[in-house]
Image 1 (cartoon, one colour):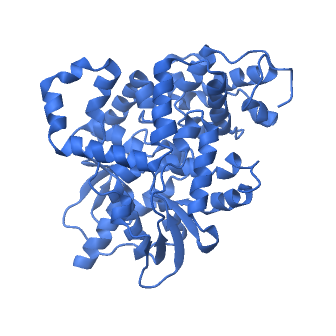
Image 2 (cartoon, helix red, strand yellow):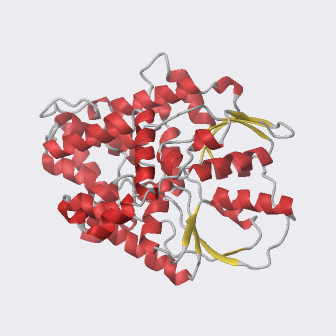
Length: 437
């Protein structure tokens, strides 16, 4: 960036094209879409307010401070502002680089925060074998009865408050992970396309059934499915939390696992990951060994609903004896981050037995936002309650969404009053019923 000399050297924001910061016209059309601005009505808690702070830092009028860091992490990164913006401001790039600058300057440092960032970003979500090992231990904790005993005994009151409050929302780990459910290559009766399937990290441990359903649906539509082993995190968690260097490392690791030249598409079924996966070229543009491959990768990454509509997927036949009242929550990083809204609805409309009921504020954030429900539990809790209230008004017994974070956040809010499910699971089930009839 050009402009006046910065108060302190900038590592990440200094690499940005200054015109990106200048794009914002301060028109205010983003304000009604921003959850944090609607909560506080304070300008600094709005997208244009945050961009103004970024520009002041880029111009050298302000330095990176603790207050700036706290503001960047108060933002959900839901990207609703990008949909509302008439100027096409690249808020995701600004947001991620601003958070990276915050981490580089260490303005939010404290020993506890450093430990948790080291454990999660540097260890668990950078070393998939370690994440899977932790998943196995957590699965044993849950199925052995120890989890029930711990909750009933009251021993959790001895734990720190933040851990005590998080424990009830711990996701249920599945017994079999994706590599046990999906072979490295699976072939349809007639090959029309060749695709690679991403299995993810949280998706791999908590929702491997969604990955299996995705493979089944692809096979039903003539896709040869290649699923490399132990893929691990795509780096979205790192990028969204200010660790762009590790995000780049994770991108390289994934690129090394797929033979792009032999594939028509790379399929993802997690909205938050998909939004990040489509921008590897930005992360690796200065790496001569990966820049070209990253650009090809970006062109080939497709959300499962996007790909199905693109290839004119086969609509399942048959009728259902009983209609299931169903509503659809649009994951932020699918509708705002990727601009995908009609495709999941087209998939759902093809499935027999679904009585679709429109959800009020379907595109509003549920409060999950990566790890926002952990770092900002109060604000996340308010958004969760608003989302649950809207769902309950529909009377639906089934809520469809396309992101694991949204799935967990909404299910924890709903309890047993409704089931949350990925649309690809419903389509896979419809294909299975078709064969049985």
